[in-house]
Image 1 (cartoon, rainbow over the protein chains, first blue to last red):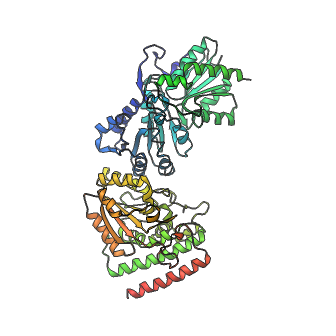
Image 2 (image 1 turned 90 degrees about the vertical axis):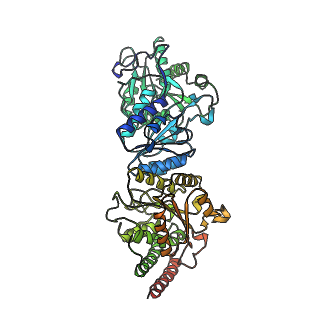
Amino acid sequence: MLNEQLKLNQKIFDKDVEMKPTRDGYGEGLVILGEENQNVVVLSADLTESTRAEGFAKKFPERFFEIGVAEQNMATIAAGLGISGKIPFISSYAVFSPGRNYEQIRTTIAYNDSNVKIAGAHAGISVGPDGATHQATEDMAIMRVIPNMKVICPCDSIETRKAIIAAGKMWGPVYVRFGREKSPIITTNETPFIPGKAEILWNPPIDGKKADVAIIGCGMLLYNALIAAKELEKENIGTVVINSHTLKPLDEKTILATVDKTKAVVTVEEHQVAGGLGSAIAELLAKKLPAPIEFIGMQNTFGESGKPNELIQKYSMDVESIKNAVRKVLKRKR
Amino acid sequence: MSELHDKKIEYLEVTANRIRELIIDTLLEAGSGHSAGPLGMADIFTALYFHVLNHNPKKPQWLDRDRVVLSNGHICPVQYVTLALAGYFPVEELKTLRKLNTRLQGHPHRGALPGVETTSGPLGSGLSQAIGMALAAKLDKKKYRIYCIASDGEHDEGNFWEAVMFAGKNKLNNLTLIVDRNNIQIDGYTEDIMPLEPFREKYEAFRWNVLTIDGHNIRDFVDAINEAKAIYEKPTVVIAHTIPGKGVSFMEGDYVWHGKPPNKEEAKKALSELRTLGRRIESEHQ
């Protein structure tokens, strides 16, 4: 059952659940931050409308910089702004930023300890018809390995808004990724969001009992994880669903406490299974609490054109695939 | 900036020569690093830190200071020696260059050493960081100026031209770029590796004010910096023609010396030549 304490969207399992693109939360968060703090500035690489930086650009034109199609320049200009007292947000698609400008981010933002926030839109394969060139499935991996960098992947537009505001208020480089498509609203304005603090969205019927498998995910696929959890209950399989929105720093405490009960894990992310959330969980558990894991995500392949739901199904990130992974990992339990 | 009278020029030339000697000492001690670029830029670094800049070595974080962004971080020996002589840190510490636990990293790192404004080394990304600082100064209505030093070879990087376009479009008149036009890079001469000429015209096409000078003539350099301050509608690039390895006969103009330090014998010979040069500077001004 849904964790009541989190005040999640009560209509989440309804057919007409409210849908909104996570990138909308980026735009809303920027405007709120811009009003609160004069030092917040926004840079865009010719994708102002589609990344939703547009609201900020219209409201604070003097603090908005159009860089043109030049993501490396955007990252390095932001580095200079960030070490001069500004709080720059750089906006593009995740394949280009942090994709194309990786070294600039590594050296001039992260190693330089410049207070820059990187917003990667259109992440994952749910970008859809644009095809694999525009589907970032490696971005969290390349950001997670950089010292000084924090990585956040929110689950819906409300959480994205909160993540952006939180990123603007914390010191240092942060990467926040979000998607293109409308996705179900999982949280509400009242749901707590603390960077680095994972939240348990779903518990088995009687807390602590029948906790057979932990499903640890991030991003909008958490919706599929919740549907899977609900359906698995009918098969008498109890799951705990964790929203691990912050990949780095990982909330080790919450994850270890849960896996200590379940002894089995399924990770869920719209990203390569190498280097992302699944890897982060595997690294943690290998060190402190070894347990079998099944990894939902891109299995060392690129995506392709198609409708978002078709792609999610073809690349085995749909509800059925999550359920199968849960059943499979159950069998591997000792 | 004070007046640049003859006595001051002599002082600056003597200081530049002292900096060259210390560069040789420092590279010999380090056992690795770049020789040609640092020697070639000694005059300009001297003019900047001992005459041009509005700065205070005792308060390296002073908010209104002029900023120097060294884009071609590999020539940091000249910056380190200049910073030390200017009083940012003890000259003695130069001996630690490139050694474990040093503040003098092989390429400059912000926060490691007072006076280093940003981390650099990977080429082509200094100008855009300087642009970020120039934008911040304008937002904050601050008068400080940003000086970016870049190499000619690093113009091969796409990121560099992205920055050139942006600064021209945005009329960043608080930004002055100084290009060390020494015509060498690691694999050979710039015009063989990837020709930059017509160089001046490229910058003009991107809406920059372009000044070309002899990078070893301190008066020319200071005049160019003053002119740049008076230009309101454009950023200025000072293309400074320099001789790589300047002051050491067997290093001058030879790209082989781009990325290696002198050995003991070579250092001895270099120092002897530089001492002779120092005496000549003094006699010329008498």
